[in-house]
Image (cartoon, rainbow, N blue to C red; front, side, top):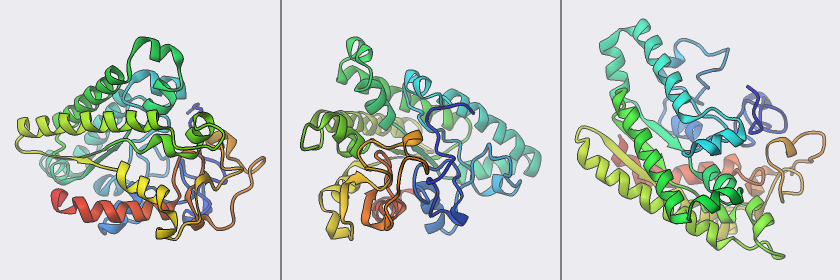
Length: 306
């Protein structure tokens, strides 16, 4: 797939199994992998479109995620990723394959008891709303985050229509504190960008509210808003408390701006001890940071989803 939001090349995946880049935006595993591992399901979640995908993987979990995707269509378009409607088409295709493998009744059981994890929104805020002046002429931050939250609600409804009953929707992180945004908008001292973080919080409040309303409508479902903002901000503000040395730079290259194509083996050296850093590149955390965050999330939300 031709897309600017790619990471299927070194040094991405340097600490993944075999050191092979797999399209994960980190040095190793990402939250869905770690979640599956911690729940005893499987070591990692393969991509549905992986040409080496085994049929049995369809029974235990796959990912339909695409780099650069967002709730707002323009977000995905500018990154060249797979838009959410297309991801749903792949999910529909997946259901058909599952039906062929185990039959309709077993497929319904699998869908009803599976956990659906949606992590989206960062690209909308950072790359679309704050990245494109034309978008800010069309929307206020309030109306844009309302659009995001409504599209998220619609996406959850679509999943429900396909048979999903346990849906976890992650909120936006403190996007103003990720290294790249500090570099481009944080001033000479690269402070966290308050207006970016405020946009994340505004979206999170609207998403949480939408899911609460939806939960009261879809009585046989479990819809959980997952707060990723607080645990990641805690790591950024208090890095040494968690064993980190650096939280305002990425491990790849200078750590100021390198992400996707700018983080590569030709122009970007990689820090030798990835676990010293909260961030792998200038936008995405390291596996070490993800593991701490997932542990916090399991402590808080496990009883709601199991």
